[in-house]
Image (cartoon, rainbow, N blue to C red; front, side, top):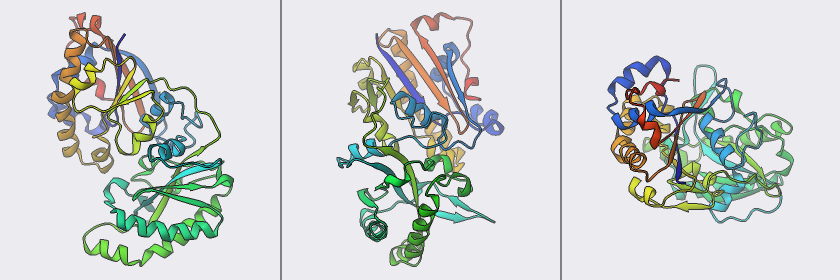
Length: 350
Protein backbone atom coordinates (compact mmCIF):
# COMPACT_ATOMS: atom_id res chain seq x y z
CA UNK A 1 0.00 0.00 0.00
CA UNK A 2 1.32 3.43 -0.93
CA UNK A 3 0.43 6.29 1.37
CA UNK A 4 1.57 9.86 1.80
CA UNK A 5 1.20 12.46 4.53
CA UNK A 6 1.15 16.00 3.13
CA UNK A 7 1.85 18.70 5.72
CA UNK A 8 0.96 22.32 4.89
CA UNK A 9 1.88 24.62 7.80
CA UNK A 10 -0.06 27.90 7.82
CA UNK A 11 -2.30 26.85 4.93
CA UNK A 12 -5.18 28.00 7.16
CA UNK A 13 -5.38 31.80 7.01
CA UNK A 14 -6.61 33.96 9.91
CA UNK A 15 -10.39 33.78 10.26
CA UNK A 16 -10.81 37.52 9.74
CA UNK A 17 -8.97 37.36 6.39
CA UNK A 18 -10.04 33.92 5.20
CA UNK A 19 -12.97 34.92 3.00
CA UNK A 20 -11.00 37.51 1.03
CA UNK A 21 -7.90 35.33 0.71
CA UNK A 22 -9.72 32.19 -0.39
CA UNK A 23 -11.57 34.19 -3.03
CA UNK A 24 -8.20 34.93 -4.66
CA UNK A 25 -7.05 31.29 -4.78
CA UNK A 26 -7.79 29.32 -7.95
CA UNK A 27 -6.97 25.78 -6.85
CA UNK A 28 -9.46 23.24 -8.25
CA UNK A 29 -7.20 20.24 -7.56
CA UNK A 30 -6.72 21.09 -3.87
CA UNK A 31 -10.41 21.97 -3.60
CA UNK A 32 -11.31 18.53 -4.99
CA UNK A 33 -8.93 16.72 -2.64
CA UNK A 34 -10.21 18.52 0.46
CA UNK A 35 -13.89 18.23 -0.47
CA UNK A 36 -13.72 14.45 -0.94
CA UNK A 37 -11.54 13.73 2.11
CA UNK A 38 -12.76 12.66 5.54
CA UNK A 39 -11.64 14.31 8.77
CA UNK A 40 -8.99 12.09 10.37
CA UNK A 41 -7.63 14.25 13.18
CA UNK A 42 -7.61 17.65 14.84
CA UNK A 43 -5.43 19.31 17.46
CA UNK A 44 -6.15 22.67 19.05
CA UNK A 45 -3.96 24.83 21.29
CA UNK A 46 -4.67 28.01 23.22
CA UNK A 47 -2.27 30.21 21.27
CA UNK A 48 0.26 30.26 24.10
CA UNK A 49 1.84 26.85 23.48
CA UNK A 50 5.61 26.76 23.23
CA UNK A 51 5.33 24.69 20.06
CA UNK A 52 3.22 25.48 16.99
CA UNK A 53 0.58 22.87 16.07
CA UNK A 54 2.43 21.64 12.98
CA UNK A 55 5.67 21.37 14.97
CA UNK A 56 3.94 19.28 17.63
CA UNK A 57 2.39 17.12 14.90
CA UNK A 58 5.84 16.51 13.42
CA UNK A 59 7.27 15.67 16.83
CA UNK A 60 4.52 13.08 17.30
CA UNK A 61 5.30 11.45 13.95
CA UNK A 62 8.99 11.13 14.78
CA UNK A 63 8.91 10.28 18.49
CA UNK A 64 10.35 13.65 19.55
CA UNK A 65 7.49 15.06 21.60
CA UNK A 66 9.51 15.56 24.79
CA UNK A 67 6.62 16.92 26.83
CA UNK A 68 3.35 15.83 25.27
CA UNK A 69 1.40 18.80 26.61
CA UNK A 70 3.26 21.36 24.46
CA UNK A 71 4.85 22.89 27.57
CA UNK A 72 8.26 22.78 25.89
CA UNK A 73 9.72 22.72 22.40
CA UNK A 74 10.36 19.40 20.60
CA UNK A 75 13.51 17.54 21.67
CA UNK A 76 15.35 18.30 18.43
CA UNK A 77 18.91 19.24 19.40
CA UNK A 78 20.47 15.77 19.07
CA UNK A 79 18.77 15.14 15.72
CA UNK A 80 19.92 18.56 14.50
CA UNK A 81 23.49 17.74 15.50
CA UNK A 82 23.26 14.45 13.62
CA UNK A 83 22.20 16.23 10.43
CA UNK A 84 25.34 18.38 10.72
CA UNK A 85 27.61 15.41 11.53
CA UNK A 86 28.41 16.78 14.98
CA UNK A 87 29.10 14.35 17.85
CA UNK A 88 27.01 14.79 20.99
CA UNK A 89 28.69 13.74 24.22
CA UNK A 90 26.36 12.32 26.90
CA UNK A 91 24.31 15.11 28.41
CA UNK A 92 21.57 17.63 27.62
CA UNK A 93 21.97 19.70 24.47
CA UNK A 94 20.01 22.71 23.23
CA UNK A 95 19.79 24.53 19.92
CA UNK A 96 21.06 28.09 20.28
CA UNK A 97 20.25 30.63 17.57
CA UNK A 98 21.43 34.22 17.08
CA UNK A 99 18.34 36.40 16.64
CA UNK A 100 17.06 39.96 16.40
CA UNK A 101 14.74 41.38 19.06
CA UNK A 102 12.94 44.59 18.23
CA UNK A 103 11.48 47.01 20.72
CA UNK A 104 7.72 47.45 20.78
CA UNK A 105 5.99 50.05 22.92
CA UNK A 106 6.65 48.32 26.25
CA UNK A 107 8.18 44.93 25.43
CA UNK A 108 10.60 43.03 23.21
CA UNK A 109 9.45 41.05 20.17
CA UNK A 110 11.29 38.21 18.41
CA UNK A 111 11.80 38.74 14.68
CA UNK A 112 11.61 35.71 12.38
CA UNK A 113 15.21 34.35 12.25
CA UNK A 114 14.74 33.71 8.51
CA UNK A 115 14.96 37.47 8.04
CA UNK A 116 18.38 37.72 9.66
CA UNK A 117 20.45 36.83 6.55
CA UNK A 118 23.53 36.11 8.67
CA UNK A 119 26.68 35.26 6.72
CA UNK A 120 29.06 32.47 7.74
CA UNK A 121 31.82 34.98 8.47
CA UNK A 122 29.63 37.10 10.75
CA UNK A 123 28.10 34.02 12.34
CA UNK A 124 31.54 32.63 13.15
CA UNK A 125 32.72 35.90 14.67
CA UNK A 126 29.66 36.21 16.91
CA UNK A 127 29.97 32.53 17.84
CA UNK A 128 33.53 33.02 19.10
CA UNK A 129 32.39 35.79 21.46
CA UNK A 130 29.54 33.62 22.71
CA UNK A 131 31.75 30.54 23.00
CA UNK A 132 34.11 32.33 25.37
CA UNK A 133 31.29 33.53 27.63
CA UNK A 134 29.67 30.10 27.87
CA UNK A 135 33.03 28.42 28.40
CA UNK A 136 33.67 30.69 31.37
CA UNK A 137 30.34 29.47 32.78
CA UNK A 138 31.27 25.81 32.35
CA UNK A 139 29.09 25.24 29.29
CA UNK A 140 30.08 23.62 25.98
CA UNK A 141 29.13 25.42 22.77
CA UNK A 142 29.38 23.89 19.28
CA UNK A 143 29.08 25.56 15.88
CA UNK A 144 26.69 24.07 13.33
CA UNK A 145 26.26 26.90 10.85
CA UNK A 146 25.85 30.67 10.99
CA UNK A 147 22.37 30.50 12.53
CA UNK A 148 22.49 27.14 14.34
CA UNK A 149 24.68 26.51 17.36
CA UNK A 150 24.48 23.83 20.04
CA UNK A 151 24.83 24.27 23.78
CA UNK A 152 25.43 21.53 26.32
CA UNK A 153 23.88 22.48 29.66
CA UNK A 154 23.12 19.40 31.75
CA UNK A 155 21.85 21.45 34.69
CA UNK A 156 19.28 23.16 32.44
CA UNK A 157 17.54 19.90 31.44
CA UNK A 158 14.27 20.92 33.14
CA UNK A 159 13.99 24.27 31.34
CA UNK A 160 10.82 24.71 29.30
CA UNK A 161 11.69 26.40 26.02
CA UNK A 162 9.82 27.66 22.95
CA UNK A 163 10.47 27.23 19.24
CA UNK A 164 11.43 30.46 17.44
CA UNK A 165 8.39 30.22 15.17
CA UNK A 166 6.03 29.88 18.15
CA UNK A 167 7.53 32.98 19.76
CA UNK A 168 7.95 35.00 16.56
CA UNK A 169 6.03 38.27 16.55
CA UNK A 170 5.12 38.08 20.24
CA UNK A 171 6.19 39.59 23.54
CA UNK A 172 9.12 37.31 24.38
CA UNK A 173 8.44 37.33 28.13
CA UNK A 174 5.74 34.69 27.65
CA UNK A 175 7.97 32.41 25.57
CA UNK A 176 11.29 32.78 27.39
CA UNK A 177 12.78 29.66 29.07
CA UNK A 178 11.06 28.87 32.35
CA UNK A 179 12.00 26.59 35.21
CA UNK A 180 15.04 25.80 37.36
CA UNK A 181 18.12 27.79 36.35
CA UNK A 182 16.17 30.25 34.20
CA UNK A 183 18.01 33.07 35.97
CA UNK A 184 21.34 31.57 34.92
CA UNK A 185 20.11 31.54 31.33
CA UNK A 186 18.92 35.15 31.48
CA UNK A 187 22.23 36.28 32.99
CA UNK A 188 24.21 34.72 30.15
CA UNK A 189 21.75 36.02 27.57
CA UNK A 190 22.13 39.55 28.96
CA UNK A 191 25.93 39.29 28.91
CA UNK A 192 25.91 38.26 25.27
CA UNK A 193 23.49 41.05 24.37
CA UNK A 194 25.85 43.59 25.95
CA UNK A 195 28.90 42.20 24.11
CA UNK A 196 27.08 42.27 20.78
CA UNK A 197 25.35 45.63 21.22
CA UNK A 198 28.03 47.90 19.76
CA UNK A 199 30.05 45.26 17.93
CA UNK A 200 31.46 46.25 14.54
CA UNK A 201 29.54 43.43 12.86
CA UNK A 202 26.23 44.97 13.87
CA UNK A 203 27.34 48.45 12.86
CA UNK A 204 28.26 47.09 9.42
CA UNK A 205 24.98 45.18 9.14
CA UNK A 206 22.92 48.25 9.97
CA UNK A 207 24.89 50.28 7.43
CA UNK A 208 23.83 47.69 4.82
CA UNK A 209 20.20 47.89 5.87
CA UNK A 210 20.23 44.60 7.78
CA UNK A 211 18.85 44.00 11.25
CA UNK A 212 21.44 43.82 14.05
CA UNK A 213 22.03 40.47 15.72
CA UNK A 214 21.28 41.44 19.30
CA UNK A 215 20.27 38.31 21.21
CA UNK A 216 20.17 34.50 21.27
CA UNK A 217 17.29 32.01 21.44
CA UNK A 218 17.45 28.71 23.34
CA UNK A 219 15.22 25.77 22.44
CA UNK A 220 15.01 22.10 21.40
CA UNK A 221 16.58 20.62 24.55
CA UNK A 222 17.29 16.89 24.26
CA UNK A 223 19.29 14.28 26.14
CA UNK A 224 21.83 12.30 24.15
CA UNK A 225 21.18 9.28 26.39
CA UNK A 226 17.38 9.17 26.02
CA UNK A 227 16.04 6.92 23.28
CA UNK A 228 13.36 8.38 21.00
CA UNK A 229 10.14 6.54 20.22
CA UNK A 230 10.00 4.77 16.84
CA UNK A 231 9.08 7.06 13.95
CA UNK A 232 5.69 6.51 12.31
CA UNK A 233 7.03 7.86 9.01
CA UNK A 234 9.18 5.65 6.76
CA UNK A 235 10.20 8.13 4.05
CA UNK A 236 10.57 11.90 4.01
CA UNK A 237 10.62 14.28 1.04
CA UNK A 238 11.77 17.94 0.91
CA UNK A 239 12.58 18.69 4.54
CA UNK A 240 14.48 21.98 4.34
CA UNK A 241 15.91 24.35 6.92
CA UNK A 242 14.66 24.22 10.49
CA UNK A 243 12.53 21.13 9.85
CA UNK A 244 15.40 18.99 8.59
CA UNK A 245 16.20 17.49 12.03
CA UNK A 246 12.78 15.84 12.12
CA UNK A 247 13.61 13.94 8.93
CA UNK A 248 16.73 12.47 10.54
CA UNK A 249 14.45 10.07 12.42
CA UNK A 250 12.89 8.58 9.28
CA UNK A 251 14.05 5.34 7.70
CA UNK A 252 14.74 6.99 4.34
CA UNK A 253 15.27 10.57 3.24
CA UNK A 254 14.55 10.81 -0.47
CA UNK A 255 15.71 13.76 -2.56
CA UNK A 256 13.17 14.83 -5.17
CA UNK A 257 12.76 17.70 -7.59
CA UNK A 258 9.10 17.21 -8.46
CA UNK A 259 5.86 15.51 -7.48
CA UNK A 260 6.53 12.96 -10.22
CA UNK A 261 9.76 11.90 -8.50
CA UNK A 262 7.91 11.41 -5.23
CA UNK A 263 5.09 9.38 -6.76
CA UNK A 264 7.61 7.15 -8.58
CA UNK A 265 9.27 6.43 -5.22
CA UNK A 266 6.04 4.63 -4.16
CA UNK A 267 6.18 5.67 -0.48
CA UNK A 268 5.00 3.05 2.00
CA UNK A 269 4.33 5.81 4.54
CA UNK A 270 5.94 8.97 3.26
CA UNK A 271 5.80 12.57 4.41
CA UNK A 272 5.98 15.62 2.18
CA UNK A 273 6.43 18.94 3.98
CA UNK A 274 5.70 22.12 2.04
CA UNK A 275 6.80 24.92 4.36
CA UNK A 276 6.75 27.86 1.94
CA UNK A 277 3.77 29.50 3.66
CA UNK A 278 5.35 29.84 7.11
CA UNK A 279 7.52 32.89 6.45
CA UNK A 280 4.85 35.09 4.80
CA UNK A 281 2.24 34.03 7.38
CA UNK A 282 4.49 34.96 10.31
CA UNK A 283 5.26 38.28 8.62
CA UNK A 284 1.61 38.95 7.79
CA UNK A 285 2.54 39.25 4.11
CA UNK A 286 -0.66 37.81 2.66
CA UNK A 287 0.10 38.85 -0.91
CA UNK A 288 3.23 36.68 -0.85
CA UNK A 289 1.27 33.94 0.95
CA UNK A 290 -1.23 33.89 -1.93
CA UNK A 291 1.53 33.76 -4.54
CA UNK A 292 3.34 30.88 -2.87
CA UNK A 293 0.17 28.92 -2.15
CA UNK A 294 -1.14 29.31 -5.70
CA UNK A 295 2.16 27.98 -7.08
CA UNK A 296 1.62 24.71 -5.20
CA UNK A 297 -1.49 23.89 -7.26
CA UNK A 298 0.28 22.94 -10.50
CA UNK A 299 3.47 21.76 -8.82
CA UNK A 300 1.91 19.45 -6.21
CA UNK A 301 -1.87 19.28 -5.92
CA UNK A 302 -2.65 18.46 -9.57
CA UNK A 303 -0.11 15.59 -9.67
CA UNK A 304 -1.33 14.25 -6.31
CA UNK A 305 -4.95 14.28 -7.44
CA UNK A 306 -3.95 12.43 -10.61
CA UNK A 307 -1.98 9.88 -8.56
CA UNK A 308 -5.06 9.17 -6.42
CA UNK A 309 -7.28 8.86 -9.50
CA UNK A 310 -5.04 6.39 -11.33
CA UNK A 311 -4.13 4.32 -8.26
CA UNK A 312 -0.45 5.29 -8.06
CA UNK A 313 -1.16 6.52 -4.54
CA UNK A 314 -3.55 4.50 -2.37
CA UNK A 315 -3.99 6.97 0.49
CA UNK A 316 -3.31 10.68 0.94
CA UNK A 317 -3.65 12.53 4.23
CA UNK A 318 -3.51 16.32 4.11
CA UNK A 319 -2.68 18.13 7.35
CA UNK A 320 -3.35 21.88 7.45
CA UNK A 321 -2.46 24.26 10.25
CA UNK A 322 -2.27 27.80 11.57
CA UNK A 323 -0.92 29.11 14.87
CA UNK A 324 -3.56 27.50 17.10
CA UNK A 325 -4.92 24.45 15.26
CA UNK A 326 -4.00 21.52 13.07
CA UNK A 327 -6.52 19.46 11.06
CA UNK A 328 -6.01 16.30 8.99
CA UNK A 329 -8.10 15.00 6.08
CA UNK A 330 -7.66 11.56 4.48
CA UNK A 331 -8.79 10.18 1.14
CA UNK A 332 -8.20 7.38 -1.35
CA UNK A 333 -9.43 6.53 -4.84
CA UNK A 334 -12.87 5.47 -3.57
CA UNK A 335 -13.30 8.88 -1.91
CA UNK A 336 -13.46 10.49 -5.34
CA UNK A 337 -16.66 8.55 -6.08
CA UNK A 338 -18.58 10.93 -3.81
CA UNK A 339 -20.14 12.69 -6.79
CA UNK A 340 -22.22 14.91 -4.54
CA UNK A 341 -19.11 16.58 -3.09
CA UNK A 342 -18.41 19.87 -4.84
CA UNK A 343 -14.82 21.19 -4.93
CA UNK A 344 -14.30 23.75 -2.18
CA UNK A 345 -11.51 25.29 -0.14
CA UNK A 346 -13.80 25.73 2.87
CA UNK A 347 -11.67 23.37 4.95
CA UNK A 348 -8.86 25.91 4.87
CA UNK A 349 -10.97 27.87 7.34
CA UNK A 350 -10.35 26.64 10.88
